[in-house]
Image 1: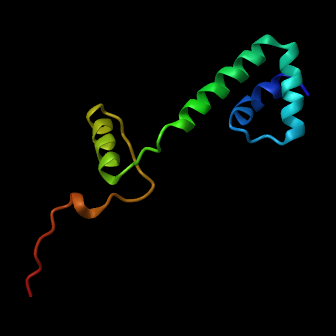
Image 2: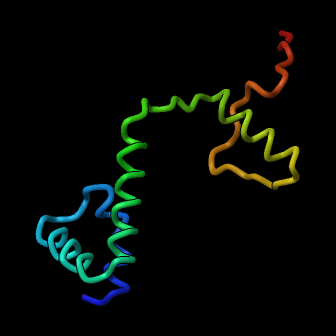
Amino acid sequence: MSHETYRKLVDLYAGDELPTELKEELELAATRDPDLRADMTSLKHTVDLVKQHDPVSFTEESFQRILMKLYTHGVPAETRAPLDPHWQYRLPLSG
């Protein structure tokens, strides 16, 4: 495999998403390339540290807070789904 292909596989290696044969081939290539080895070890270490933390809950309140920060900074943020109607004042229906 080419050097560029190995570089593209580093993120899959760090996440333990490679098949055994490909993982071994990448590790062998890393013995000959110190830059590749450094990328592999640092990214693997980073992924392991992130996996150790408790998952963060992303609530509707978090989403709205981030969206409002984007709006205040002038970012034209558009979502794929329409915003929840709780931001809209509801008028009572009369008969």
